[in-house]
Length: 391
Ligand SMILES: [Fe+2]
Image 1: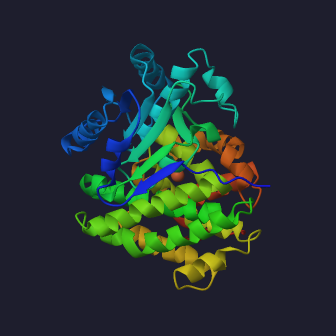
Image 2 (image 1 turned 30 degrees about the vertical axis):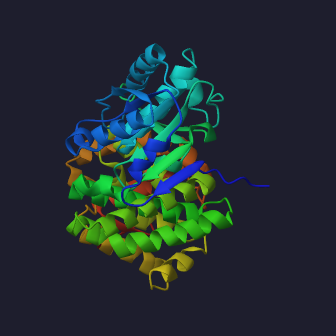
Image 3 (image 1 turned 180 degrees about the vertical axis):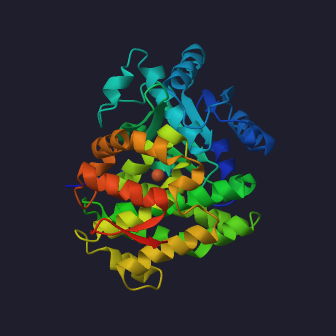
């Protein structure tokens, strides 16, 4: 038996933010990041719609990129004072992920963060509040996933908190909100969505629903990402990418991810490389690595008019450069010395990352190091270690 986990209500389409008018409740805390939601007017619109619904609001703003557990505790404090029955995560993935964990600490002030690192150990939520996710970027799919990524800066580790409890009750997928997203964010997050579609499709969990969503999402990304990057005001391309992000998120919420994410989590936490950019560098080589154990890549290649696994990997490399993304980790200014110093630590953590358990091929720590090194230099990974052919 399998269960499909999905946000209870999903409103999608340009202008769907307006659905907030129809929410039933008394008080909402809106959690957001820096200032983009304010500047674009989206935050004010959301508040106006909630007020129209008779809901009193409070804002927690300033969630940082890669939010820390301290931020989550702070937000929970505000919620304890205000006692909302709705929590609204509005903005980028960081804001929504932080809002999810604030929700946990609001409902369970004594919850043990360390204990929740173990997958599926978040206690039962919705005793005090329900959750609305309104993403402003098109990639992570956090609006439909039971995942929140929280960073421990002291340890240099990103913890994916995994629990179906964290799946939002309502998701609003409004492409108009993305119009102000800068080109490099559109590009990074779009490549993250693409990675979700690929990893969910080949994961070791069979799920027909996830398969269809992965294939559909992948095609939409290939058809729309370049346009969304080049013509940011094309709301059709924006909405399509927003839909693809949701589809990828829904796919991986039910079939999970693989070692692209395991590898990326470490590089993001230690060196601050954007998540989607890391994924886009690791993905082609992980496809090559996984192809020994998975025969599913040609299915995905066909979706984009290609035939073979290698053609799929190369098409991703081409799209990556067309949307101006990097092809090597070293391009982010990380010295070889720093890289080598942290390689064992990263490979060991990647091996232990929850996503590794869903990868179609079980890697060794040594193999993870080989993939890391190939991607640091921007080389093609092969079983005979690394070919010295530049990508
Ligand atoms: Fe991701």
